[in-house]
Image (cartoon, rainbow, N blue to C red; front, side):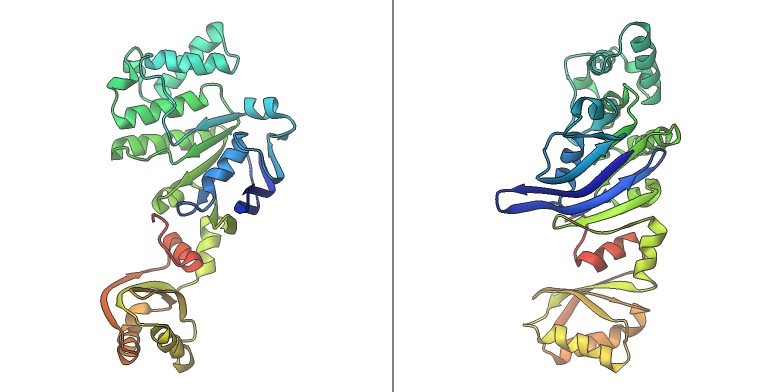
Length: 314
């Protein structure tokens, strides 16, 4: 349903997306994860046709987004992070507007709008204005506007930003229902728990490059049984990191220093809690000091830390 082949997007000398390739099929949810500025939104904009790739190819339902934009967009539904609603039009008229934009009319349009209102849980608020809605209700209407024409590929860009827990769960249910009805969903998020709950497969992007992709289980397997240990404190110069790294030759074979700064250090190792005293001693002997410790067991979030050395939500 979606093919992204060697995608490159440059802005002058800045390369925002560099040689990214992935594919996603009908009836699946593909998660695109990465920190702010990693290249997620640029990739989504190239898929939707808002940006023209510098190089590479994007195809939606077999149609090239650049060479066959009309056919590609007809198969595509976009639910943007920024709400795309007409606040002074009733909810039902927002849906009718977007349905007409995609060629729906008459009884077919009316039936589809009623179906979507029920799907998004706003059947009893159809004639109310979006400006009177809560944030979660607006998010659900935003979702409805993106799917009113029954797209085969749905782009969801951070769809749960700023919503209450009940609306978040309703959005999850809507995503899974679209998948179960055969749509392909591309889901970008900052929340690992969402990715693990919804996505059949994932791609992790950082500095414009796709650094890992696969199913959740496949990506977890890349980490193995290692924990991620995050330390805050004082770690002068490079001596502290070198002192910790020297423990590799002293029995901690799978220890890895993922990131080291003057005030923080991120490590990956097996059975991390058992080796804390040795790590603290090595840091102290090098003139450093630990003020805060966070130990995370193997998970999708720790895989991201292992690959990038930083928090996804930063």
